[in-house]
Length: 355
Image (cartoon, rainbow, N blue to C red):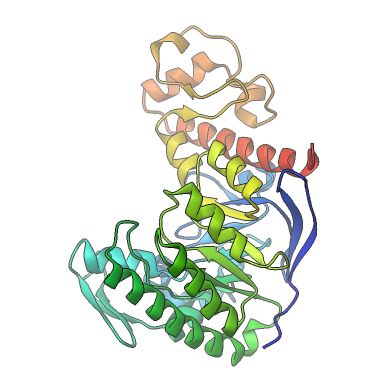
């Protein structure tokens, strides 16, 4: 099957950083790019105007949570998540599989069967059945620009039997996702990404990629936790240069810079906003834990090199005060700053390309 050319690689620097663009019906995303998580259709504490001002190029919606709340019927009435949340830029979604597996294996609220995953809503107890076809239906209804197939993840220390089963099931479900995607007219202009499994086995990573490549996808993602840099670099080397390379769920700034130099294009993570809400800010001078008492009388900006609302308007002392009295303006401003730090980092990786 011939894939659509919705990811375009422009060139690759001598240090391994790739410069390209993801072309979608809602706009172009320059890569390498970072995407914040808008789990329920919102990046926590921030408005779409905040996201626009920060320079966010794309957000990630969690199709599991959106399927359950507010539900597909309401999203259909708004012609997709973009209209519902008034976000008219590109949208990335995951399959929801990771959250469902957590319910099955950690909370014992479901089971995996050949056709999919049976589970109960963690809040209401209602029964649901997530199949590859349902995963595609959820994401197309959400109106995602970049969709991810339903995969079967395992932990990095999984035994050989579980790891082999993960690869086999991921291939089988990816094929069903591909068919459902291709047979739906709503998929026009959208990208479908498959997930390479295999944990810490190079042999199984290779097998997983080769089986998925035979089906054919617009891009490929790293499945599982990227705890082994050798496996992360080996996996990206399996993916052809003309395909989108997606490092799911990563990470801290140093990891993202490292992974871009390996050749990964796209990243998403809750780390910048989650850490912001706990008072950890990333700056050009190093990490700042704003709750530390040494900032109580500090009249300097959080980051003198940053142009965000926090750094151009308030002092470290004021932000320290907001966290101390538990005023929600503090976590909001910190979230704005951390996301702007990530955006500026990605712009630097693009602009300083090859240096």
